[in-house]
View 1: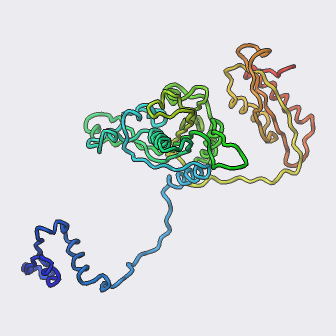
View 2: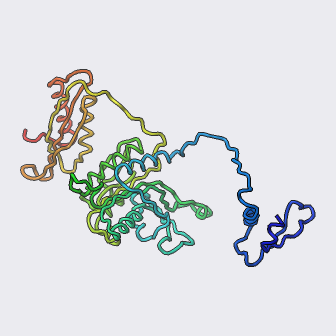
View 3: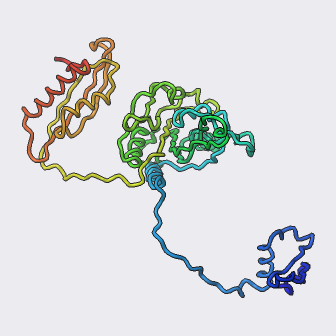
Length: 389
């Protein structure tokens, strides 16, 4: 090695006493690229010839690798969004403070933004508390380059300061981290096709995608309710906004962004978005439940129900399913009406009920008994009545 390094300008000294296996090398001033021992090893290998170094495969032990607990659910969610036609975006976890403050409290909860002591620049002075600003930046980036229609999603961590008790705990407290998935849609979705005209995705398109995503990732159906105060209602259009819940607990929001919330991005037209918390998603894939194809015919009944305007559809459906039990196969809303001759402060909801038994054909009296029980509970519990009776 000394004979190889000396012609290259390195001064190689004799080893110190007791260190016969080591060489002391002085690096010439013009070799600013040589800073540590591994650089000298590379010089020797280069001069001797890489082809002279024997190739050996290091020994290793094979083990079965399992994805970490949350990662499996996140992968299911990402695969579902990609299959739904959304492109995945990846942004830095460092973000600008201004946009974060508008959207942060919707899912991440209370707590100050995490400020960086030595930010790279003014646009990266905090850790993100919402994935939405990054996706809006990407929408604006696409629009500035001629792509007005885009559907994007991102999954990643967000950060909020944890309020410590006092004293040293204030210095030791680590930020709270949550894993979120957010998506935005602007313009029509899908690829161009000669057989159909392009159509902009609407709130109900995104709602269907969200419900499928929650079912796939969380293994539980999502329930949508009106957004509460202090949540995403502040930056959503009240005519197209909902809070996403599982077991009465909020996990996110969905809706059409209000123009005032996106004014700084210069994005005309409707922008639909949702953001949900996947931190508590189970690692195990939810079990699929299969049933045989029905062998007996279904019985259908349509009910037009007049209800107080404050009654929400999900509570109506829950009551109907409770009355129908296992014989009620499906409930679907197909009409909503308010105005004359419906009294003020009341609405008419029309639902189609499908009844079926797995082992026999239902009789008309059986179905009518269930319908009568539904009507009775609607009157007593929700102040409803059947229309045109």
